[in-house]
Length: 288
Image (cartoon, rainbow, N blue to C red; front, side, top):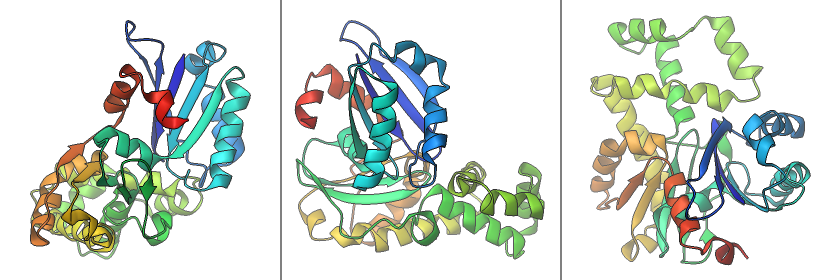
């Protein structure tokens, strides 16, 4: 059996695949980001899932695509946990951007992730290339769920958010000061907490304040990340993956048009296309 995982900071989707004739088994756990979670926390998420435990001895190959897995250290950290739990399997760990690539193209392209966090790369048909480092949710991540969460909280507490929207936002979430501070500074996953506010944003995207916020955030992502690949984009298409990208595609397209650019596709969840890779029997070949 092959087990493939696509993990962000918020959630991790697992697919257990045996062959073409059988429907893959879908499993969801909390996100496993080795940058923000300890080894113990990562182990707990995996070992306490009953479905993963039920098949752990039958799995022969694990491919884990994850946020925070861009360094050898973090890849090794996750691989060790997987190899220990799935004792009969070979495990390979790659950064989540590779899953985004496979979900959108087999040809050269610029591929972006906009989910809890954000990322962007150039895929030459074989490997990915990034022109700027990903410094995570504190410094970068423009256009991501946690980026917009910060902006919503700032607008609420600075009282720059229109009053009717501020009342609605306050009613939708527990925004007591102590609660927010604890979530931001005592939680292991503050980026996940911030990204939870994105739902409110898209529920109110027609409000001028929210529309302006979305347009500005998407514009910053384009300016700071996508335009790093302006030369490549003269020759290759542009793809987007992730829930924020999918729900915010109209705003992205509007901001891209201002730069003379066009998005080729928006994929909400990459797992369906990764399953297609499995069914085409080229999964192992591409990883080895």
